Amino acid sequence: MRGKAHILGLVHSARAEQLFTESEDLFIQSSASKMTRATIAEVLNRSEGSIAQRGRRLGVTFYDPSKNAIYSKNMGFFQTPTLLNSYIAGWIATDGWVRPESVGKPINQVGISLARKDIHILRYLKNVTDYSGVIREYEVDGHPQAELRISGVPQWIEDLERHWNITPNKTYTLEPPETGSISQAQLLAYHVGLVEGDGYIGISNNTLKISFVSASEPFVSWVSECWVNRHQYSRHTPAVARTAVHTL
Image: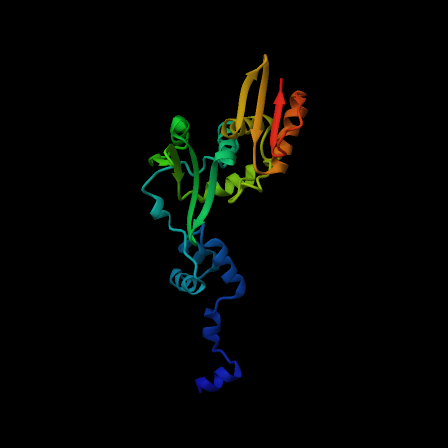
């Protein structure tokens, strides 16, 4: 009987109710890295056990906040733009990264790596974000480095993209922040973070020089226009297309 039903494509009504639809599968796949099994089950009106089983069949790993609970942090730090988090967003845009997953597993990590002589900056970031973890110190080809990795912060990743357009693998694709989301003062704070991260301020021949370097040429063009339009600095055509240089 079962074999005949299978050939005819017949499905028992009770079993049909248990089958996952394509839209449910897509929701599970897109939400697994930022929502727990229990939350997904509640949204889909399914049992947590059925979500876990379906996740295994789909090959997804569900977000587990308990794995990152060993260290505390302010999960809402970037939720509402301020001068402080806009400044730090500028640092992340230049010397940092956002990493939702690693080797197919969700880690929801935000981090910054600097030369060890600048470790005081990482200590400051650690302090203002209420992070209780440690700063990693190491060497690369004899050069002392320091690194702050904060995992288990999916809200940070969402907020950094929503307000400041900071996304994974941003080296060549970095875009300007959403100007409708942050104020002019916060935008200036963001620029301060950019310059402190990948910029330079110096005096040469009694002239103040401000420069900024990025691998994203459109982003450098935006930075350059911002500086020119706001302060009417004399603008120099850069030797490298991805370098913005202004003098005052």
